[in-house]
Length: 346
Ligand SMILES: [Zn+2]
Ligand SMILES: [Zn+2]
Image (cartoon, rainbow, N blue to C red; front, top):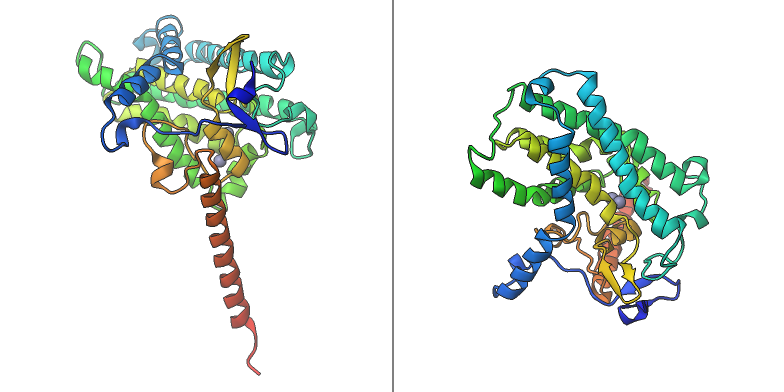
């Protein structure tokens, strides 16, 4: 496909899509019914469908009966861990293998003109972003995330929190299914914004940002504190009158959606003249500029409300630079005042 029909390459060779990022149309004024309809269609049929289908598989084929989950045993917990591990390895590995190793579409639609393998760095284990990110994702974040999931399932199965089945209240449970991505983006925005504040950034989140040019392996390449806090979004279901199916749906959404933000390509080609939009641009810009787009282009315009939205346009770029300049000037003023205070009077 001709990527230049849909975007441009800058002097550094990085790809800039022509289409700017936008949020769901629910907050537009006046109300745009057609836009809402088309957005809802994309919301229901797309990545969310895949996450929902995976949760059904987990619920019927991986989780044991409630009585078994009521006690913490190696059997069911290890089975859940093995399935989580294998599924994430295959899902992330598929995109890595196809687009980064086999490079089936070469650099077409790739935001950053380089592949991580071309940029060895001392910040990574073995100087390799791929190895570092894959090992951290698979051997730290997935086990920690599964630990949180086991705890939450046990809390529900042992009756320590109220459980509401679909048959008890179909409306409530359907609503919870529909807002699973909303819970994901709100929780992610909150913890993500907090760990961008010093010294938490230096202690915890800097590690994830070592990957300026992310790939799917970067998705869960996190400090253990961040990995645990990330999957802790499922704990909201302990107070939401929810059930184990929704817990698994929330966990799988967190696990698989992470890869979507780190695909690194604007479009994934299917045939010579068809491709599907990856929805990776928002988070790619976050990795590039650090202080914009703390959550993806989701339902709530959280980044816009907090003044840190970058839609990819030159105007957004200018607004971001202005914010940086103002902060720099403020820091310089503060330093000057401090220095003046410390100067002894003559
Ligand atoms: Zn990231
Ligand atoms: Zn960040």
